[in-house]
Structure formats: structure tokens, C-alpha cells
Length: 219
Ligand code: AMP
Image (cartoon, rainbow, N blue to C red; front, side, top):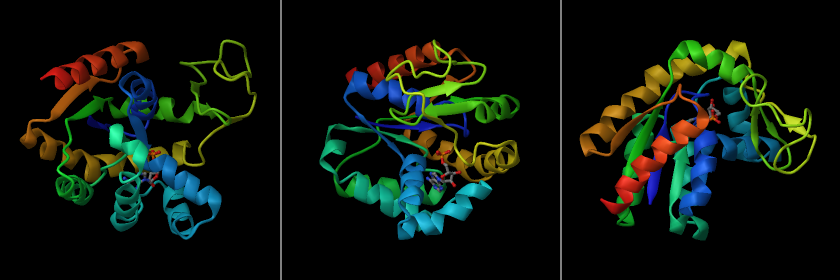
């Protein structure tokens, strides 16, 4: 099964992809995570991506398409994957289509998690993750059960993304509306587009996503 989660930055794509991957035996492929790893490792790609990411802009299509082309060839992606943060432009959606077509594969569902702009700033500026296991938290909406301790692994090493600040949020939202939202009709025309209300509680969004995925799996 090949899924795409679409929606604005801070809309819950990463959170939901993590919840779906174990239940369906899929691997989460997040271009944002891959690019952050490239920046942290100081690789050539990381050097090119760093400043663009910190300013809230989009990394070039060539770089991101190259990363995904390599990644979907890996053995663990054979069972299926959930794309999170890719495609982000019409050119990326077309390149993905071509890549999958060459392997006789296709996207089964592209699901938009819709959240209005005015809710995004609070979501993004309050979020952080466990530096050890990657579990996601939020200052207001999802605090650890014991303050300062990760629920999943017990670590007290938490981190916030460099680009999760009020200054870049608007830039990222503008980029979403200008460059990413135009790919929604691309999947609508293919009959694979679904919509979920991303303002609902996390578990309800997960339940609705699973309903869609289950429908696709049997249909
Ligand atoms: P994300 O973790 O998806 O919010 O991505 C963080 C940042 O990485 C974005 O603001 C972009 O600078 C960059 N990025 C991630 N995915 C893509 C993509 N598919 N195309 C271009 N830039 C991307």
C-alpha cells in the first residue's frame, strides 16, 4: 500500500504517519526528516538544504526527488510506504508518478489532513519531540505524563526544530498555499484524493484515516 499524507505544515502528517505505520506494516518516508538528517550529518545535500529550510522555503525539486527515488528502492519500502511532506510541488507529484509507473506501482490514497491557517501557528510553535525515540509532544495539547520524561522511552532529552518558530511559520504556510495545495487537484483527477478534518482530536483523526485506508485496502 502506498499512501500520501497531504496538508499544511503542523497539520499532523508526521504524527499520523507514525500512528499508521505499525498498524499497516508501512514505512514512513518524511522528506523533512531525511533533510534534517542530511543537515545534521553535514553532507553535500545537507549543506545545500540548510539555509533554505531555516528560512521556511522549499528545497529544490531535484534534490528532494533524488532523495525519494533512492529511498523507495530500499528493501524496507517494498512492503509499502506513507509519504509525509512529499510531494510538495506539482513537479514532485509528476516525478513521483513517473517513478512509481516505471515500477508498475501506484498511489492508493492521497489523504489531505485539513487544518485552517489560524490554528497552525500555535501548533507549530508548541511542538517538540523526544531526541531519543522521536515521540511527538506539544506544550499545550500533548504533554508527557511525567513532566520532562518521554512516555515512550523515559528519556529527558527533548528537541525542537530550528524552523518551528513564529517567524518562519507564515512563510511555510504561504509556500503551502502557493506550491503544495495545487497538487490536490492532481490526485482528485486520479480519484485517489480523500479529506480528513485535521482539527479533530489526534485519535479521532487516526480513526478516520484508518477507515479510509481500510476502504482502500479492500476496495
Ligand atoms: P517538514 O518536516 O515536512 O515540515 O519539512 C521541513 C522543511 O524541509 C521544509 O520547510 C522544506 O524546507 C524542506 N522540505 C521537506 N520536504 C520537502 C519537499 N518535498 N520539497 C521541498 N522541500 C522540502
